[in-house]
Every structure is written in C-alpha cells, then in structure tokens.
Amino acid sequence: MVAVTRFLLVLLLSLGACRPGGDAIIVAVGDQRLPASAVATLASNAPASLDQRLAFRAVAEAWLDYALMAEAARLGWSGRDTGLIRESLAPLVQRETIGRLRNQLAGERPAVTEADLSRVYAGDSLRLFQSVVLLVNDWGDPDRLLAKVTRIDSIRILAARGAPFYNLAQQFSETVGALYGGIGSVVTRERIPEADREQLWRLPPGGMSPVLRTRLGLELVRRPPLAEVRAAFAAGLLMGRGIQADSVLADSLAVARGLRILPETADRFRQVLFNPDSLGPDSALVVGFQGGGLSPTAAWSWVAGLPDPVRLKLAWSSPADLERAAVEVARSHLLAEVAATRGIVVSDRDLRGLRTAFGREVDAGLAWFAPNRAGGPVSADSLVARALRGEAAVTIPAGLAAALRRRIPHGYNAVGIGWIKSPS
Image (tube, rainbow, N blue to C red):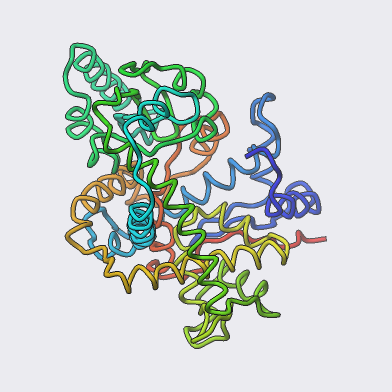
C-alpha cells in the first residue's frame, strides 16, 4: 500500500503542473467533476500522520466509489436487479471455477492428514477466522450508528454466553460471508489489516475480539477451535496445494499451447484496462497461443472485477509489467478451458444464495444516497474526509463497478481517471 504507484506518480505530476485553482479534471462521472485543486485541498487537510501519497490515493478511491454509487442511485438501480447482480458476480464465477479446478488438482495429490491439520492450526503461519459484519455507510448518522452499535453489542453478548457463532453470523452478518457462517479464508499474518493485525493474530482458539471499526463497518471476529472448522481449514490447505498444482498445470499448458507475447501485447492490454469498448471482439489478440489467442473481450472478463485503483495502477505499469500481467490472464484463461473439459460448471443454482447476500450489500451502499436522489447526488467532501481519516466509506462490492460502468447512459468512460492541462 505504501509504494507509490505509477498512476499516483502521474496524478502527482499532473497536479504539480496545475496552477492553484486550475481546472484539471481528475475524475469525471456524468455531471460530477473532481478538479485537481479539490484533490490538493482535500489531501492537504489530511492528518499530518497520513503519508501524503496515501492521502491522494484515498481521495481517488473514495471519489470513484462515491461517483459510481451516486450515479447508480440517481438512476434507480437496486440490489434486486438480477441482471446487474449476475453481471457483477461474473468475476466471482471465474474465481469459483478456478477454485474448483484447484480442489480437483489438490485431490489428486496426497491428502492433508489429521497431524498436518493440528500442527498447522496450532502454529504461527496461518489463521482462520469467523466474523459478523454490520455494514456502516455513514459514520456521521448518529441514530443509525447507535442502532448498529447496540445490535453488535447484543451479538457479542450472545456469543460470549455460548450461542453458536456460526448461527449468529448467518442470522445477523450483512456481507456475503453470512452464507458460510462468517468463516473466512485461510490467511497469513500479512493479509490482516495492520490496525488489527496483532490483536487478531494473538487470539487463542475460541477467542473473540472486541467490536472493531473496519472499512466495512462494525466487525466482531472470532478464532474458532479446530474442531468447528476442520473441513474449512483442510480445504484451505488443499487450496494452497491446488494453487501449486494449477501453477504447474498452467506452465505445461503454456508450453503445449505455444503461449507467446506479441509485439503489441503491452499496448493492447493497457487499452483493455482503460477502455475495453474501444477494442471489439474481433480486434487483434492480446496474447497468442495455438488455436487462437486471448481476445480483448476475454481479457476484460478476467480484469473487470479489479477495483478501479488497482486496475488503473496496472494500466500505468511498465510495458514489461503489462506483458507479465497479460500472460497471467492468458494462463488463467487456459486453466478455465481445462475446467470446462473436466465438466466444472458454476450454475445459477450455485449462485442463488450468493446473489441474495450480494444484493443486500448493493442496497446497503445505495441507501446512503437514497434520501438525496430528488435533489441530485450529494457532495462527496465528507465522504472523502472520512476516508482520509481511515474511517469507512461507501465501498462497491467486487464486480459491481465494472457492471455499472457498462449500464449508465454516459457509457464506459463515464467513470475514469484522467488529467487535462490547466489553462496557462
């Protein structure tokens, strides 16, 4: 997070080239405009302890999420729009497909033994947590915040008295994780947000955290005993083995299919990241391999779920980094072809519960803007200010941003980051 991305360097250079009060446009969404002078003002008001580079990133991330959600609310989108949800879940379908392939590949390797599970779970290299999350989209609304605090305090009391945490998460958690009883992925220490890392890592099996304020809202985290999550933890270890196995498979596929970088790979992949609509389905290939290659449309399907700042950072990478990223996308594409030949399919039935939870997240994000629809989108200044303080801001679930960009009437480029020279 601390490293300066190429995108931010360009942003900073563009700001530096602007006179105070200049009108360089950093973000444009419909009739919403964020000028360079506003970014500079917001970042300069950030706490002294916040690195200035991170302040600029926080402004960009918060405004992109704000602008998309404001436009979506103005147009009346909701979490009950099944078409929007289906499109938004496409990146999750791809990850689930590759995950199922990894499970098959891992199953073809030696099984994880009971001794492995006990030794690793008690060790210091990996953790598995459960959580109950109550979404908070406006920390400045005292009534709603008090209701959320009261509810999660009640949940914590129930958990402390022995109520099954799995059931509490299913009943009360407001994120997709509720479907799985709040059980998350197997993680390393580095995957835990720094602010809460040490206290969560030190939790003993069966231990529970105090109520935490996170980017999503109010969160209660528990480290379950191994007996409660044996299957999930074993699946996590198998997934690690599966990742190793599919890497070997991808290597062999790359050789067998003659995967190759083209002279235009970097430029075409950058264009896919910026504006895939400028490259039709019949455009020249991004990466070549026997029997065809990676088309711009196929490449976009693998990067559409990336958060905007991550995608834009990648778009401003060096040609060598772009080539490496394009090759990784092509390798995933080849793995998906193998999954299809093995009969691995993620059906609508598989996604039914996921759609319900995803729709709840979408509605929660849009609710923040609902009272302001009649008068137009609200100002994002307070939202960005909270982001600069490290507090929660409106956050778009993965995949929704890409789906919204394609649906709003202004077209794909209604949301994007750009810079225009200030008047001399």
